[in-house]
Length: 283
Picture 1 (cartoon, rainbow, N blue to C red):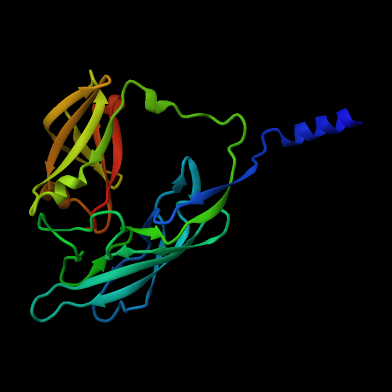
Picture 2 (tube, one colour):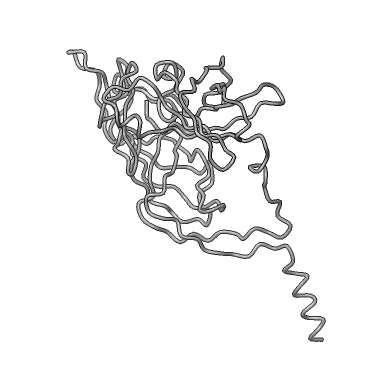
């Protein structure tokens, strides 16, 4: 009987996910996407108005999802100011207040659009120039189209119950393929200059890989390729590290308000290899 019970227990637990707890650290970044457009004109948008929003991308601790993409976010208009007769453009700030973790806990948030973020540079790009430290929304009236993305932060640490990966999980080893590309936007280069004119990227490829890169997608949409200019490179551990630049004005013309994504790639068709990065600069 004992053997039979053990066999049944073994069969019943095989492949079933077991619960585990992970610590979601304070100040973890949560990307938030607006659902409805906002135009602060004629009193249509007022302080305190709710802003329908959702989590833009999964929030991960290690390789575990602790807050799922698409989870509703409670956000409100914290302040709004219309255009003045002196020609000062309108501005608006939006605060993100709470969302929900995968185990149903209400996660308190801080920060939001037009607010000084934690642990990153808060900048505004207007006509290709960068000003610190306030973020202004350009235009005759402050506005945000639907689908605008901004960042908020978890206000304190939380213990989140997640599911362990079931047995027979497929392990993704595609990052070890020969056709690799990794891209990083060098924010510190922007901070070093009073009026920067270029975005500078650090592009990592295999040592024998290409040195010609383009930006061919913005916010997931294909665009006419924008060439990056390779400025310098060095080789280390069979990898090439290439510093490449593009004019800020060239990209800003194609950005939407809020945070944007870009794809840096090489090759075409089936041979295309790309890396998507978040440009964490609010427009």
